[in-house]
Amino acid sequence: MPLWKFMLAFISLMLINGKLGFMERIDKMTAVLVVSLMCSFMPMNFIIIIAAAFVLLHVYALSLECAVVMLAAFLLMFLLYFRFSPKDTVVVLLTPICFWMHIPYAIPIAMGLLGTPASVVSVGCGTVVYYLIAYVNESTTTLISMEAEEITAKFRFIIDGILDNRAMVVTIGAFAVTLILVYLIRKLSVDHSWTIAIIAGSLVNIMLLLVGDLMFDTNVAIGGVILGTAAAALIAVVIQFFAFNVDYSRTEKVQFEDDEYYYYVKAVPKVTMATPEHKVKKINQQKKTRPSQRSGEGRKMGNSKTSDQ
Amino acid sequence: MLNQERIILMTKMASYEENEGKKNNAIMNYFRGDYVWLQVMKSFVCGTIAFAVVFGMYIFYDFEVFMMDIYKMDLMEFGKSVLMKYLLVIGIYSIISYAIYCYRYAKAKNGVKLYMNNLRRLAGMYDKT
Image (tube, rainbow over all chains, first blue to last red; front, top):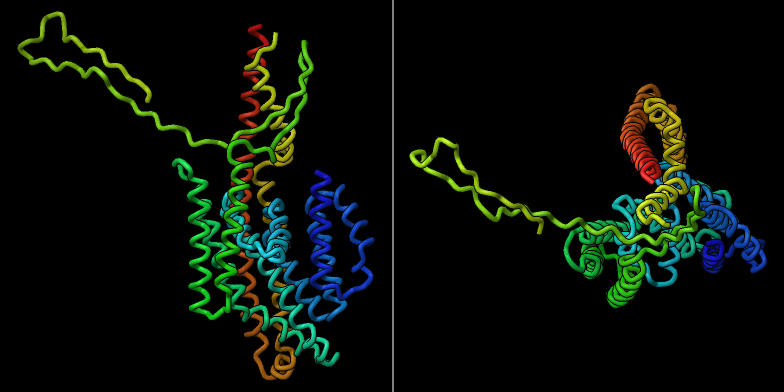
């Protein structure tokens, strides 16, 4: 677990430094290594806070107004949503990472397989963070060229850029629908529900992004969408392989004792299967006798057997 | 001799104690009313800060126009409309928080009840041997 945390922190901070990199003091390998090492011993949410701090520091070096907008966005996410669901904060970090690695469509499919419908909010927040950073990156020259006194103008420029970003809205909508669809299909008690969910989710994702492009002119590369979704489906198949049969990520080691033994137990949970339907089938029907045939001893009742199928 | 049924039960209980059990016990330290209202109060504070952030951004977005209009506008009406929006947002957020934490309390109570039942079953297994 510390190794995974170190890797996640290292990759995140390297990508953030690569994409932003405005503050030279933290844009160094030594700083990234030291901070990643620190993150490996801290709770998972500490990595998110450190990543947010790095983004804010880089953006502050570029423009104070950018940093204020970014801080406001992070505060809103953490105050309104992540106090309910602190486990989902890692998705806010993974979503931009997947965007930067050109496999963004893996996130809604993976979260549909592994998460709940509430994960839509975390995926949406992660998408907002990505587009915010991308917009700041694209607007670097414009922001630098603006006068230092034009505070309101800079502020308005950044807010307008985020609110008018149709590509972001279409992406969030497509991801939300894909995630919920994948979740609903994989919950069905049919054979190969996970595989059907992955395929359906991938097709719906492509369809929604293309329809969004037609309706809102978001300039999405169709080839990129199709290839990206195909890569996402492959990643989802790998996740299915590891998570469906036996969920090794939830392996637990417990120890306890009684009067006779010490027990050291490693438990690998299976994924919960839907309980089979129990049908009750009566084999011998009750014999119905006419009133004239009833004897003084009473009506004879046939035996009825029930069986589970 | 190892009793497999007992081991399976003890493993499930140990796993519960390590994971869910800690969270559930922390929740069950409170009465239902106290827990839910404490969490709703925290949501109230978070919601107020979030509203203040959004309101601040809204004012700063058109700050020059706002400063020019401030002497012309009816401040009481403006204050009333801001207050109404604040109460609406906080009201909705508090209701959602109330529902979520009521559900969590009920789930924690169920978890603890199940654990106690398993404990009784385990004690029964030891009594039989």
